[in-house]
Length: 498
Image (cartoon, rainbow, N blue to C red; front, side, top):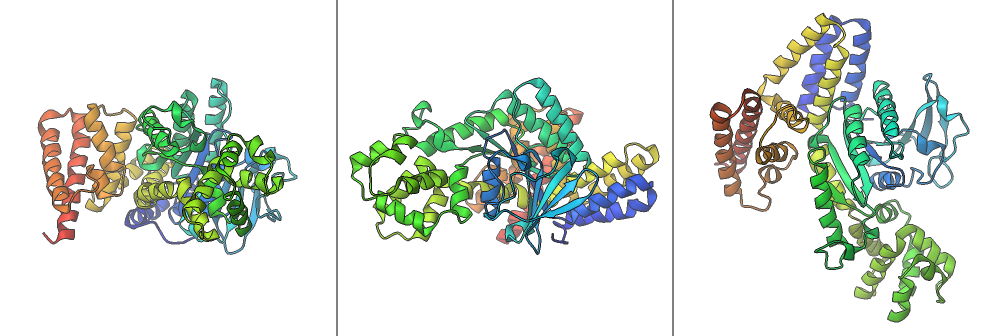
């Protein structure tokens, strides 16, 4: 675990907490210590979703190693934190605070069964030497399964408890679903983000993944022209609209392909088997691709067991993509074939969004989460509450803390605490929901001079709106958006030397 803070805002919040610590009681001070620990830790991203949505597969792909079991076992009912460590190990943390060290299974995964009463376990901590975990702690959560309202209530209660115990403690959420967003997906996403972030979360710290897009019949999606990824993009756009404003975007993905290509599961022997399959005549090949049963039982030179192994790693879509790549480039190496499968998985898009929404904004996300925690910890004592409030207001008054004001404005809009016309609300979400200036301005791919002019024009518009057209509550948000555009304009002018 790194000891460095995410950035200047986190450092400023840490100084504020350290200054306040002697002014509060022992219980609040202990909570402040946990806030300081969290500020100095990597950004914590929880992967949440329904049972069998592919959460653990996505966790493995992100980490680049098959460590999270994807079957059903005791450990899949528990929260598991994957974090950086000098030595690979698993720690079973009991509800009484006890810790028991376990080895990984022979295949490198966490044991599916822990030989322990799960009711006595708080959570699991898996320490790995993988470099990606130096900057990101990945939290695998139990699947959310039932459709009934009682289950949703139990889920909220569980998550609140997890949050109080600082077990999940996520500052950002990656929500995984398949096919369509259901009403309980909406509810559990709201419950999870509210519980883990300590407040109603907005698009600044939540991304959704539409997983298993290879199972979508493309002919069922209008405008797809029978193409799987075009169908996936159309569906992801519709789901993004349904989940707005709770998520920064919906990314289509094939988790199984991503896991196999990125975790080392795809081998040179698999590449050889695919090359042999690529030699089959077209009629036989198309017949085999009609179903998993036909693929494994059809008479051909590649053994049925080998085909079953390929099916488990790539599914029919991935196998077909690999064979197409071999037809296009007969001399393709196993490494290049693995890269082609990775490209076909959509993992790069998810990582890019993680970088743009989470890593690029980690400083603001962590600082905002810390301030929310500090405020909640001091809520029980009027004197502590006032001292914390005054200190936070002083911090927020500094120019460098504007990112926190923008996050606050996002929360006001996403929770409907401040009502805005739909087009203006969308603009607030766009400006505050990305770390990329072209995306913030909605002008991706446009030349720099257009970005400069647009940022200055919108800064002026929002200043006028704040003064003449807005309600008092809207004016509060409008001033923040005006300042955001003005700072973007200054940054662009500085970059261009103008």
